[in-house]
Length: 161
Image 1 (tube, helix red, strand yellow):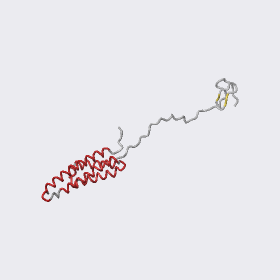
Image 2 (cartoon, rainbow, N blue to C red):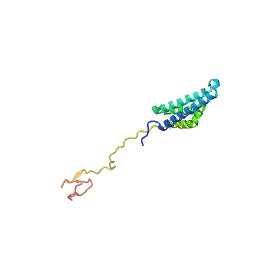
Image 3 (cartoon, rainbow, N blue to C red):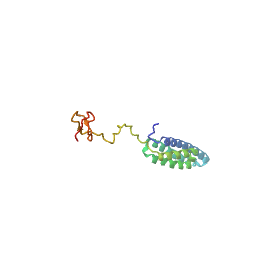
Image 4 (cartoon, rainbow, N blue to C red):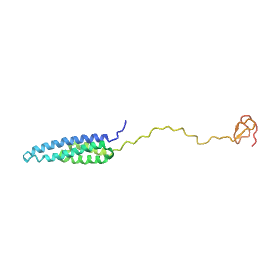
């Protein structure tokens, strides 16, 4: 399985968290505006703050995908605004808060995939002991003989040391 070059799980969880926080903020804004209808809907300001937090979480998730080298920064932003989402969006019905918390932590701790070196094949190792080479030759037949030999192994002639 090929690894992604960006924190994909953190991106998906953070994006879904932003959507839930946005939905929670819209509900809060609508309810607060309805409750404070006679005060010109001033209560909707609380929900508007929640909408801002949701937009920041969504933008953080999108930047996490497009700019993975600064994953720790975007993860911290997602984490902080997921915590703040309790004020103005009720944490995106708790689901947005939890997904943002997990997505932010995953983004902060994500490690890029290491490049795998190409498989290379090396020649088998040579023997540690070099082969003995004869420095002498038989004067009778010319065959190579061991330096410590007293007789030629090929013709049997006695060798002079």
